[in-house]
Amino acid sequence: MESRHSARCVEEAEESVKELREALLIAGITLPSLGLDPLSLSRETPCPLVELGRCSVETARRLAAALR
Image 1: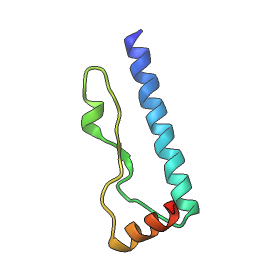
Image 2: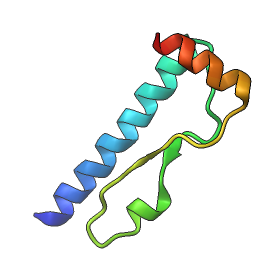
Image 3: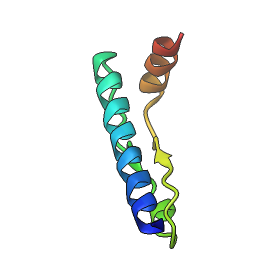
């Protein structure tokens, strides 16, 4: 039961990263390091975190503008 829950959590996290990547692409923004945090996946019961990663100042400004 717990392994199915963990697998579902990872699948949902992967889907959220995909959705975020697509939404950012529509806004003309690319976050090269966007993905799942590997440390959060290494736990016995994974609790995935989304890693947004680093970006340039210009990308940060474009992201802020898109969020406004």
